[in-house]
Length: 227
Image (cartoon, rainbow, N blue to C red):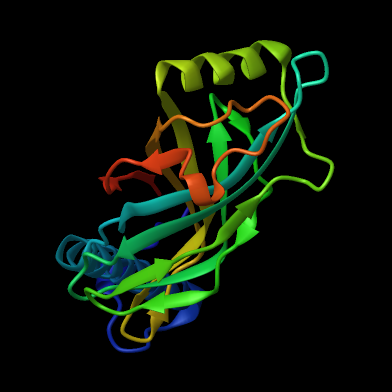
């Protein structure tokens, strides 16, 4: 049986053995080239990531005004509220822009959503840019059903003089580097808002807030951001 020796063939060689050897060398060179190309691409991506590694934006809750808040007695426990919040977002990147797509804001009390999501305007932030949104947050027209224990807890918080509400921003962002734009990343923001209760009527059956300033926002605070 003849043994194929690729090293002995010169030029084009003769016979099928020479052709097979030529193809084997070509395949090996092509494979080596593809492997080198993959490694080079991965290396470039790694360098770009390390140099331009995007930092998640920073969010700040600047204000939360409770225009009205009304909770029916605990037997039915429906909450009606209208708030206006002011949230600022800062792009901390020097070389990366941020697109904000399909982003909503809403308020929570002890983990229960007390307003419907309000869409924020679609926005693009350039390098080191800042965006400020001041949406109105409202409950459903029919109110938000609260567990009776939560309605009681709200009344107790008002009696104690402090109510903690969480303003949340939830949506999708994209990174922009030069002309390249990434896919969507889930943005989750939590902004605790401490409100003091300054006298006036309680929540049950009466509208709180408005001109008498029943709830007052304490101070601007940083939010936790998860991307």
